[in-house]
Image 1 (cartoon, rainbow, N blue to C red):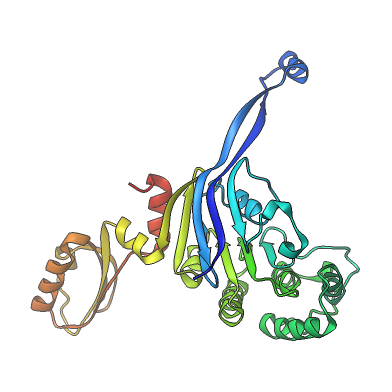
Image 2: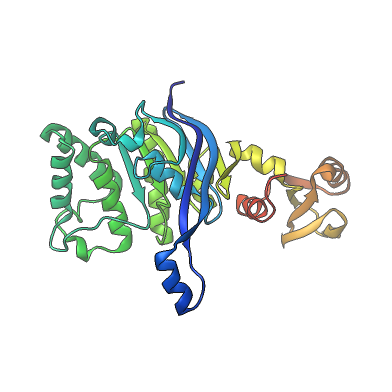
Length: 327
C-alpha cells in the first residue's frame, strides 16, 4: 500500500512572550522581552495509506489542529519531515494544493453575503482551474450527495449553520482533492445534520477512495467512520492502531447484556454491577478476567435466550485515556 502521508519526528514549538503583572513590568517588557517555549507537537511519526480514513484524536490542546495545519502547509514545523502526496506541504506548490482540502467545522463556508452558493462554487472552479466538464460532473455528484439543489441559488448569509457546513464541503470538494483533512466536521451541528455528515463522509470515501484524516471530539464520528486511530496528548503520540484494540486493551471490564425467559429474575448483583435493567433484560459490568466464569454461571443458573459480550462505550474508554493516559 502506498503511503499518502509520511510524518517523521514532526515538532512544532511556539514562543510566547512572558509578561508580569503591573504597569511597570508591562513597560519593561516592551524593551526587554522574554519568552517561554510551548511545545505544541513533539516528535510525532506516523503514516497514512492511500484510501484510509484515520481518526486523529486527543483532548483539547493535544496538538491536533496544529498538526493538521502543518500537514496541509499552513504552518512550517520547527523540525521534522513530512511528505503528503509526495510533496513537502509548507512549500505550498500549486500541484499539491490542488489535491488537498482542509475542512474546519469551526469555519463553514463564508464570503460576501450577497454571493450565492453557486457563485462561490464557480469562483472555486476558477481558482483551481477546473474544466467545465469536470465542474458539472462534480457539482452533480455533490448536489445529490449533500442535498444542495434548493441551496445553490440562495445567498450565503441566508444559510443555517448546517447548510453552511454542507455547502462548505461542496466548495472544498468541487475540485476533487485526493487528500482531505477534516477538523471537527460535525462541530455545532444538530443530530440530523450530524447523521447526514457521517453518511456523506463514508459514501465519499467509499466512492472516491480519497484519503481522510479526521479529528473529532464526538467519539461516535470516529467509531462510525474510522477503523484506525492516531491518538496524541500534550503534543506526543500515545497510540497508533485499530480502534477496537485500544478499547479492548484499556478497559478493565466488559458489558454483558443478558435476556432471560424466566418469570422470576435473579439477583443480578450477584453476577456483576448492574448498569441497566428492563423487564427480563439486564446490562452488567463485569471485570474482564471474570467474564468467562460469570457467563458460565448465567447459562447454568438462568434460562438465557440472548447474551452479548461487548466492550464499554468508546466515550468512556477515551474519557479514561484523557484523564489517566495510557500505561
